[in-house]
Each structure stands twice: as structure tokens, then as C-alpha cells.
Image (cartoon, rainbow, N blue to C red; front, side, top):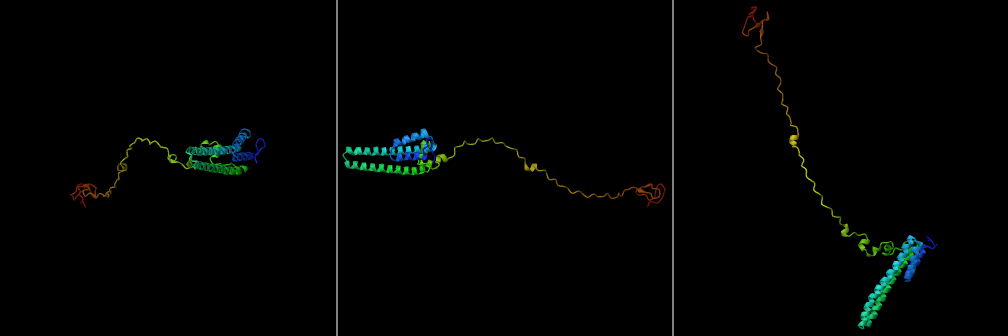
Length: 225
């Protein structure tokens, strides 16, 4: 087992603190807690003795509240001379005090078993308070179990988006954008020029030009063919 600065086992010191808490000796528990915090200064030991001190304080606080509550009723019934009711109230008060003490003993035994093995006592709520979370006793069950409340689950409100100015883009007419379809006109077949009937006639003898209606050459007198 781990030993502290003075050669004492830290687990044994924690066990002694819980034993004094079970014996309803808050002063002894407070002294051991001061020794651990000021002399040993061990983080694990500090948490255990603080849990023992808080357990002892919680028991005495609950027992005091119950005693005061039933003493008020007892005083009232004494004023009206209802001594039978007074005796019943005293019995009920003793019963609740015993229940609280038994519950404290159960938590103490469980803590001693864990601490003797070098583990954390893990007392409900008290463990978190000993670790520095003082608000653990005032948190709701839903927060302790990790259930998110509707207010936490709702996403934060977001500002409406700023309207952007609308820009108009000129879109070309698809009919105008496309190139016009050109139709190819069929070309007319090239017609060869027929030999002109009025072609100039030549004389077969002297090759002189002959008039169109001449039968004889005017140069040589030969007959035109």
C-alpha cells in the first residue's frame, strides 16, 4: 500500500476517518481530515477524508433537522396535554433517526471496503463535493444523468440572413445566338452553248468570209458549200 510522508498508509488513514464517522465522532474525523490536508498533502487521501467528513456532517445535519421538526410537534401536543400523541411523536422521531444512522453505516461500510483496496470511496454526491464541485448537491437528476433540458437542446437563435441585391443578367435569345441555317441552293447544270447558227461561214477555197445567204464566194467565185 502507498505510504505517506510519515510512513503511514494512506488507505489506513482513510479507513480510520470513516470508522470515526460511523462511531459518530465528528471531532475525530475533523482532526484526521486536518492531518491529511496539512501534513500528508496526498490528493487521493484528501478526497477520502473529505468524504468521511462530509458524510459525518450530512448525518448530523439530517438528524438535527428531524429532531427539531418532531420536537415542535411534541411541544404543541404538550400544550394541549395530549401526552399520548407526544409519546407517539417521540417514537416516530427515534425511528427516523435510526433509519438515517443505518443508512450512514451502510455508506460507511461500502466506503471502507473500497478505500481499503486503494480505490475511491465514491459516495453519491459527496464524492463530487469532495472533488471541489460544491454545486453537485443542488443540481437536478436530469443534469446529473446527462439528460439535456429542452432549453439546452434548442439551438441558439440565429439572425435572419441579409438579403443580397438581385442582379439581372441579360440572356441572349437562343434563336439569335444560334447561327442561321443556310440552305444550299442546287446549282443549275452548266449548259454548253450550242453552236451559234449565225457563226461566220468561210470559203472552202480562199477562206474568205461568206455572207449568210451567199451561195458563191465574192472573192474567188467558188461555190459555197
